[in-house]
Image (tube, rainbow, N blue to C red):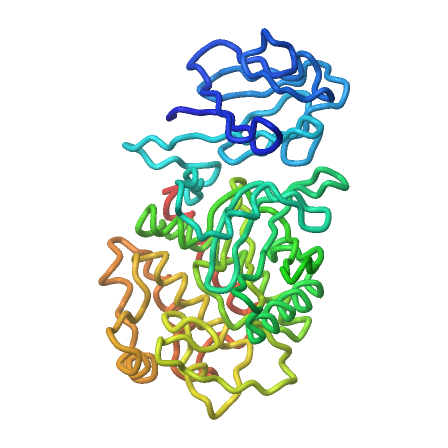
Length: 410
């Protein structure tokens, strides 16, 4: 375990940090003798304490009058994990760990890693939102950035719960195309309430700044995990694939397809729970949508994971495009690279349409022989040759998981 510290997120001492010792107790409160002094009247004199036990740090409430909240839940005792938010009435603290440079930090599941603390200057000038309040959401820190939005860890001041606040980027004016996609993401997400789909709570606007409040996931994206580890075990890959397939199965039953399944849009919590996010490209099956590839290689979807029919602008796509995208994602999880990685957009399109994906058995040593045929089927050029529904794909992945775990045990 690397060094750990507590950082004050808001209030008059925002930015102040206290490094936690390898042994002993750190007291937090209003009393001047505390190890971390909080100059706020509503904080108790000795509000809480943090102790090192069994190679981990634990937080204890010291019988405070207003309670100690961890990620929005009132606690008496809890183990701390990197990124945890501690609320002491009107003061917010964040627990941070510096990862051991010689060892990948793993959490609960063998395929889950935690995000390292953000370094200064990683994100754009929109960091100015930190410390501000949008409607009833107090913005605490940046946790991610995409092409059209930033995502902030925030606190809902109504109940002290921690949420993810997705804020649409803007210049002097709001890009109307991005705004429409943003509104669509909320509309679609609000229809889908499933354990493997990130829950969407509310959309709002303050002085021209548009935001969506969503479920906060303390963990990492699959893309971050792959960047960290290179590739995953067959067991870990199948566990992820099954949960994503369950999400797609639920969405398909609501007549909705995602159209942008990729590692970046798959989040994994520290408990190993998998959730899909970014529903800005999702659509209802009854509507026709034209697909265009731009000069940068981006269309509706992301080229590395797009099916042949999705790069065509002459016909619509259905749930089998999501099956292809999930298959391409699982392919990358297993061998560390997507099925196709040509240089140049049109060479890429040609490969997707005409080239067979390289045999996984040649890229992954000792892969169970039953795995490649299932993944290969999901990557078929013709939609009718793939698994025909997320349910069918899920069932095949569950069968594979049984085979892989049985082989592992023998």
